[in-house]
Length: 325
Ligand SMILES: NC(=O)c1ccc[n+]([C@@H]2O[C@H](COP(=O)([O-])OP(=O)(O)OC[C@H]3O[C@@H](n4cnc5c(N)ncnc54)[C@H](OP(=O)(O)O)[C@@H]3O)[C@@H](O)[C@H]2O)c1
Image (tube, rainbow, N blue to C red; front, side, top):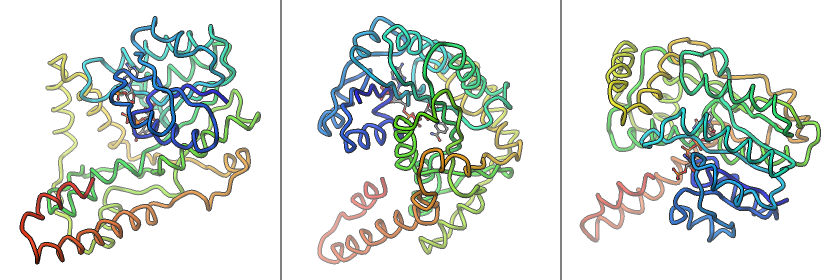
């Protein structure tokens, strides 16, 4: 198939582009800055310049495309707001895809989005889901919980570097999934007619609280976490403050996720219907234990090698810092 991946430079989008290329699809990636997408070109993708918020850039990107995989979202540090990218930009993309006559459209939403109308990104995801079901497009909506990749920066690296690990007292258990598995399952949907015009959850095998993840990282790394607790009220206060400045709107909107944490409602779903539909085995999906075990195993081995080198030369501290990413 000829695929257009939107958000190919992002955490999930790059895994989708890589896997699609490995599977023999022809992949075009829409990138705001093609230089940032140079690695996608090296993998064999075509990279075309475009921006969801510049609708005139979308028809050329959609020419001769069979399926769109939309893995884009506003970056917290972006000058464009969540509303501009995740709502108006997505409406632009959906309309352009419909006009171009694409056969399939994959969209990534967030599990339980409809339950949090007070959280901007959740409200927008929920509206986009509804919009997609109303336009004449052959969509599949995947409702995701969280990415295992995000836990490396949040917990694993601070623990390895003996830095503070920040957590709120409350934490909704979340069924994190490896983005490589999300890519595998999502692309499989392109081959399965039973996924057409369906909304499916895509979550990991078990929901974890922050305290459980920290305990797991401590066990696997053999190091103790320096935990700093942020009261939820402080996050709410920061949200109010960041809302005062246009350039921190996206940060404010991200802080609104504190409300999701405060709900205590688990971000997880029953996947027993999804695996048979996709014709895949739940055993093929990484658990959080195996994902973090692989990460810490690799990093701790490298650290040992660097310590050995340090006996012979100076300056390995800076090398160690770069290693964790
Ligand atoms: N991260 C999670 O835990 C999580 C959980 C549930 C659902 N999701 C959903 O999963 C999807 C992928 O998320 P992610 O974390 O992989 O995203 P990400 O790493 O933040 O990447 C976002 C991507 O969107 C692109 N983008 C942003 N604004 C754009 C615009 N105006 N025009 C074109 N492209 C634009 C970015 O390109 P640049 O390189 O140019 O910035 C980047 O490639 C999103 O729909 C997200 O809402 C994520």
